[in-house]
Length: 168
Image (tube, rainbow, N blue to C red; front, side):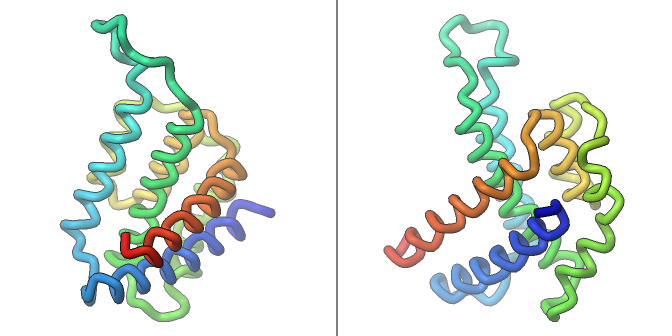
């Protein structure tokens, strides 16, 4: 399946999950402030999972576990997609298509995205207006395929629904 279709499915699943979470917690909206803090928190968790690669002052760092890195990266996807749907567009049915059109170049050129510095990419996601482009660049920097992102997203989505069903 091509990246655009995978992303579209992920956005649709995320929109449904967000609606269920809001209902479960009696909230009407997710504020931009809370979403930005969630993104920063997940980026911190991702950075912590990568610590074995960049922490030069401790010999006790565990080696990087790629599976854990992928899990944390997908958590960032959850909140970036939510931010894109919440911050930029209304909740109409065209929202996801509009987002995918806006990011069409980055999506279509995913395999050609250059390797940027990890620190720049992690910092850029939290303040960038084009969060999805930077997140795609981060995915490439960490050497994950989009198929890996998609499969882990599907796995995490099932887990999130189980947690929701059990009262988080």
